[in-house]
Length: 164
Image 1 (cartoon, rainbow, N blue to C red):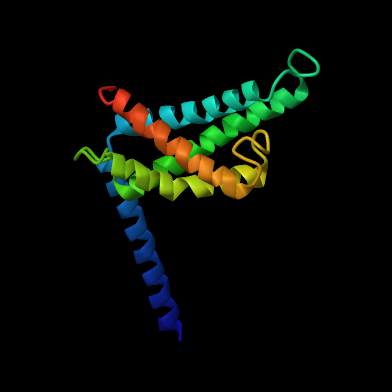
Image 2: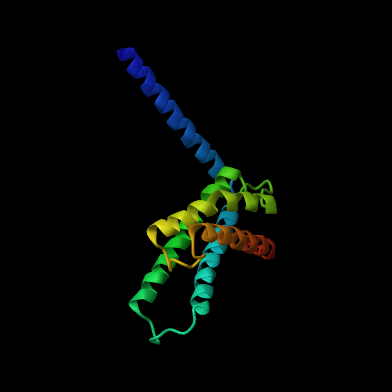
């Protein structure tokens, strides 16, 4: 029985070493400038999404900066950081950051499909930004997130193709 515990411990250590090795390999093969560019772009997307929402909601009853505005802006920054993290993880998993030219529209679509629902669900769960920023329901928010993020990234990755 003692041998069985040691064997299970060895197997767990081998799994952890394998996962660590796989992550290290993906990071070594990734192009840091691609990761940085995409992180900047997804952050810009979230910030633009908030400002478009803010502009479209009409005039405020009381002009100026209020506590609720600060709460929304900090939630928006949190949402941007979260999307950046999810996008980077998806890009590493799908190998879209590798120097071998993995940056295609299909790779971006896969990244959107991999991270968008999780990002929107987390955003709603923690209440980042205005509740109706993406739509009246979670389904509408996910659909709008898919369309908005996919369109934005397709256009902006084409425009910023030569950034280094």
